[in-house]
Image (cartoon, rainbow, N blue to C red):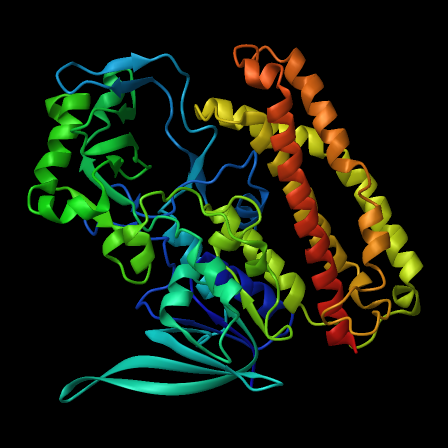
Length: 530
């Protein structure tokens, strides 16, 4: 029997499989696609030229430590996103583009040499052969008490064509590392999940589901000769691409952009889309930007990315998952994962790795034997308290870094609110990982009925964070008042009462979720130990 079955061979599923394999668990990863990577997809030319990412492209070392550490640990080469030169803006289709008064827009982003597919390929190669099984679509899950039965549909070619084969796999625990809406739409659960859980899945927009990217390759990055960065924004109503950037790498030159045309209108432009994109690039960068070949990836047309709800959801935007999707289900045998469920950096590759780390904390095997001192709750709790004291000192530098990055990316809405929340959630996430590492989770018995109640160590663990978020807000306000960069933003420089109340509400919600997550982790680990 498999220890952990992971459904979804995207970044969350592959990173989690690697962690669990290193911890000695028997893991299998199933994916309906014929390739691994999910929404990481790189177009690599056979005759040379730039490798262009059609899905996940960038990561930010200053504020995204997980993917930065993973890239370094795997020995992958990265390079800074080209960002030097004039950024163009085209608000009026009848006029020439105008320069924007900004010094770069990517905030220190980096890309991988050879594209993000290198990350996927390396993770797959770090797993035993046969761990990742492609072309296997999950049809149903059945809770059978001490394990879960997975029913999978796979297509197999034979002499008469292609036939569909149904197979059944048994696993002690299952992780669904898929967009929540696709889970709700396409997988049958026996017994059925509670209505509020299904509603929570349907409420989370799928990242990239409504997006389309187009790109063109060139012999040289000619735009640099004109002093242009290759970045541009288009704001008029006839826009084909709303944002363009330099997609070049060490092997060639390219420009890429996100589509402005909404998903439901794109089919009517399908035949003319290459010409429209080429014309848009020429309007921005001159006739040299006209291209014979335009490549487009429309994620809306991918049924393994875009759900029916995503196609009809005009809001889109960064996913915000209900905390119920981060909690264990079916008595700790079923878990949801993926970037949509991340507590922080949801929608980014960093969020996918945050999700993988959270799941690894729950699924990590409890050692069969521990040193006597590790069994003492007081000693483990004292070590955790020391760690928290040091970690709290890092919250303010994290806040400042988030503010700096948002300003550099021209992302100026609710700066303080979002930067404070990001710094707090990073601290909470790291704290949960520390709890799992310390063996604290199994060092004390839980209260009666702990599977759905409170673990004995939950109150003293939470007590170590007394006053944490209030202190951070106070320090952030002092920093804002002295910051020259924020002096032109009155709401951030001197926030009013309504803004402060909104910040407080966000932090209160984050605290409640952290408290639940702490208790869930302690109880789950105690169940494994006993």
